[in-house]
Length: 116
Figure 1 (tube, rainbow, N blue to C red):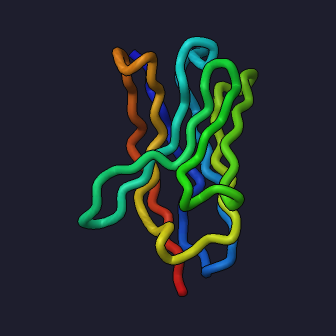
Figure 2: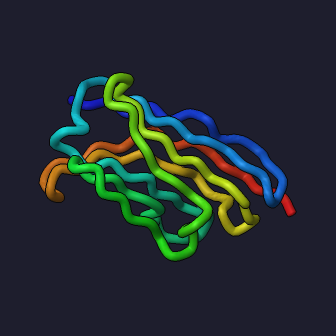
């Protein structure tokens, strides 16, 4: 069983920055793709950013140029650097570990609130 623990959420003004962290309980980055998802009230959960086991990254169009996903293999940690935050970025952010859609683990989520 893999446990994912997110941290780094909070309240920030529009235009500000936050860095989310996700620590995995075991070394999985070499075989799992790691992603950040978010879910705003009344909306479906959506993919924000993903980094594959090979290190490739991809982003939702709404965050391209503002968010950066990265990982530190030695620390079993994935990060999401969020810059130029907008009120529409307000959501609960979840860390996900996925292996070809067959095995998937989720963190408990961390709240990000961006005030205008």
